Structure formats: structure tokens, C-alpha cells
Image (cartoon, rainbow, N blue to C red):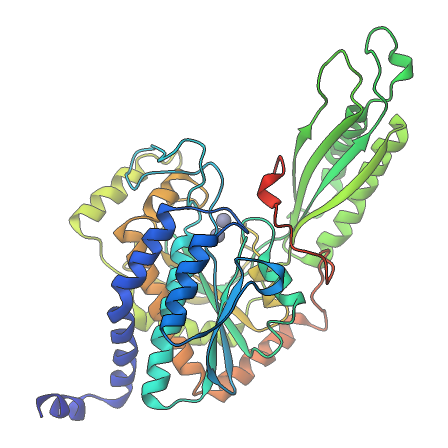
Length: 472
Ligand SMILES: [Zn+2]
Ligand SMILES: [Zn+2]
């Protein structure tokens, strides 16, 4: 009787949101534990067997139907619940990074030196997105809301690009909108994009010879590579300002007294716009050909990772921004504050970033500095990705500091901000056909007649041995 009375006096809207938030809270401990288990056994892209299985099994136990090993990827899966339209996609990642093994403490100390670690917080990303899917499903079920939720377990974001193979396999064809998030040092929803990137291995083949006794008989593959890189340095002046080109010589020969018959350059180029980047890439290929021509060597190019820039979505930005304000940030405990301050003392340069209690939801635009295969999905379905504060303000991704915090209660509190925001947004979207239409209108407007472009051809197999090859 008492609870009935309480329900009667609460405003209806607040009750509905509170119910979603309560469902997230009810599963918080379970998914927090899963995020910690994934953190404790970091697995590189396409090898996320344990991580993928943990999330898959949990979603199956919560009534989702699993499609296993999708798009030729043993660790890729989808988990679907519900029926009919709209179909809301929620994407989760769970791959780790090489060499970032780290204990959950504010001083640098690997669990196993040289081993992988969750320096990008994907243990939280995949678990938080799955928690949101379960909470939203329970709320839809309780209220008899129509629609479908599909969780995408997307392997190998850090290289290999699992989502691209899922697009080619048609797994996003029936989806209306996609939501995802990324761990970071603040709670932010906005219209920022990311950099499109393209990479490749440039393999030069020459003729080996004694470098002192018969140099005239040799043709140096390393010379071909060096000349290519010299041309790249000259090109740098004549590309658009925002372009980034970075490379390593991943093989420079075996001994100075042998003219190298083989050399290899691994290069990545980035630009805020994938079409502009494609034009730059054609010029990079010419630099490689020039190196080979002048040195009488031969060059072959192996396509590497290629990600499109994120296409922001105005309508989804409104829905998700509103819900992140409802979801709210969080306060540190005294222990967490001390941990965060100790971490911040290890940064070489300070950055002004608001704390995790703040929510920054606005319609600001910007190009962003990182690259992700979320960008590719955003060109085929209206997509929104936001950031939640899993790390102390100022923490950079891909660092031991990020890896440490991804295993702590701070990381898990940030994960809950994300889960609350996504769950509230899904429950809103399945009831708001106008918002979905507006998301599609914004999608078409921002595409401006352009279509998704990729160098990864449809039908090509995923590079499952991506992290086995020498250099990335
Ligand atoms: Zn990353
Ligand atoms: Zn990441």
C-alpha cells in the first residue's frame, strides 16, 4: 500500500526515468565485476576470446539472442532482444593494447612487463554498453514498449577494425540508430568528430650484394624506403594543414655490410575528412613509387587499418545530451580523490579539464584527434558516441595511467554514467519516432550526398593475425 501511495504522488516522467536508473543500479555490481574480469585478462584485437565470451554469456542469460562469430571474426557477436522497429544498436569494444600492462595503483608498475593492458578502457566500454542494453530491455519489457535492441560485440578497434567487416556483412542494414561511448577524463556529449585515418605497409624489394666488395651489383631496398620518406617530408609542406603523417621503418635490412634486399615502412596518414585523406593517400603512393623508381627497386603496398571520420548527429546529440544531464556525473570518495591526485602528479603537462561531477553536454563542433572504426559505422547509420569520465581529469588514453584507472572504482563509476545515459536514451528513442526521423534527417544532411568510402574491400577477410605481424 505504501509503495502504491508513493507511486501515485511521483510525477510520471520522473518515475519513468527513475525506473531506468534503478535498473542500471541493480546490475551495476555484476557488470562492474565483468569489467574488472576483462581488465584482469587483457586480450589483443581479434583474440578477445575470454572478454567476448563473458559479455556474450551475460547477455544470453539476460534474454538476448546471440549470433556468434559474425563477419568472419571468432570474437565478434551480436546480441538481440525484442522485435520490430525501431532497431537501436549499442556498440561495445573489449580489446586491449600491447605493452600497457599495469596494476590498479597510481604509480607505474606492470602486472607483467611487456604484456597487453586496458590503456583505452575498453573493458569498461564493452561492459557499460552491455549493462545499458540489459537495463533498457528490462524497462521496455516492463512497460510493453515495442522495438529491438541489438548489442554489437565489436572486436579489434585498436587495429584491424572489426566494425568495418560487420558493415560489409550487412549487420547494420536494418538498424535505425546506433549509440556508443568511450572512456575518457570528462563527461561530454557534443558534435565533435574524429580523424579519418589510413595506413599501410610499404615493402621494398632490391638486390642483396656485398656492401664493400660489390656495391655496384646491389640495389638497396632501404634506399628505396629512405627516398620515399624524403618525398613524404617534402610532401608535408603541400598537404592541408590538419593532415598528420607518421611512420616507422619496420624493417631496415639485416647488416650494414649487406645491401638490403628488403625494407619496410609502416605509415599512417590522418585528416578530418576521409575524402581529402584519400587524395593525400594517392600522393603518398606516388612518393613510394618515386623511391622505387630512382633506386631500381620494387615496392608493394599492403593495405592496413582504414577508419572514416565520425559523422556527428545533431538529433542524437540532443537526446543523449539531455539524458546525460539526467544521468549526472559522480563524486570521488576521499580515497578516489587521493588516487586521482597522485595520478595527476605523474602528468608531464597539466590540462584544464572539469571533474567527473560535471556534465558537459552541448552542440560544439570540432575535429578531434583520435581515429576509430565508430567513424565507419557513423557513415552507414545515424550514430552517436560520447565520453564518460572514467579517469582523473587530464589523463591521456593509451597510457599506463589510463590502464591503472580502468581497473578501479573510478573507472566503474564512469562506466555507470555511460550506462545510465545510454539506457535512458534507448528507452526515449523507442517511444519517439520523431527523434529517429530527425536523426535520419541530420545523417543525410551531414553526409551531403557523399557515401561511406573505405579501402577495405567487401569480402576481404578480417586481418585476424593483425597483432602477430611485426609493427603497428
Ligand atoms: Zn584506443
Ligand atoms: Zn578506445
